Length: 373
Picture (cartoon, rainbow, N blue to C red):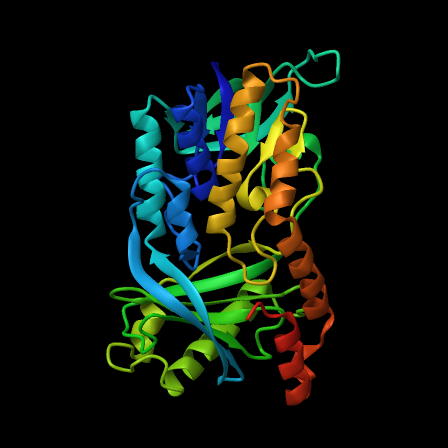
């Protein structure tokens, strides 16, 4: 058995950031990651606001390409160009650097290590809070238990850690993306595409220094097809149209080449912040807290920012603060509450609309009403 102050389940942007912030504050944390390589494969479009760099007191690694504008297309007709200062990340490099810094501070990393379950210890404080949590892990086929004063769920929208408090589920969209060794004509612009065959979501073309991320996120709940088949068909159709409309150069992007590149898929939380991101001694961060933006799907900055907000309150609680972990929830609501409330409202409008048979002008009004730009 390993005994520590905090057990962090998940070493993505949220978990890795929090682990580093806590290590810098002298907290004995254990970081648990189920993958055999940190943040690989990357299931993310990798576009971030430049504000991300301001959350750290060192120069972050993994910055790949500068983005200055976001162009929004509806039915492949340009409707808006919006200032959107940010950059494309090589996310794996970014997260791996955070984990290396955490380990260099004396932090303990367990990988590949899968969380099987988390439960409160048998004894409680007088207020009903557990004195400790027990995290059951599978560490390369070997059973392992971590006893900690707190647990942090940083393992995404289907969080195994958060199930310990029966905190409820998170609604998701399905995403699919390929990183293609092709030259985009976008330059310093992130391109967003709304078309009716991508219901409830959109397609994207984000240029990197030597490649592009081409992908889409969509609502699959009403589909009669299998989710995997529906997404693959939509992606192939989207790729064909992007090439046909001249957004990608055909040179180096033959049909066979594009099909040989492995697509990655994942879930995008879209229901907004969970009602109780803090429950007794368990804290949710990032996607596990539902902090991914319900309209844009942007998740990296909210993940790291939530870790930045949570870290000092976790440190204070471990040192005996009477406020406990409660201030974390208040900090989340100040930071994310207003934008999430608007986004959830617009998400509900999008999901109620039958876009596939909607007249063109009605579809145009729907997107203009709900999109951030």
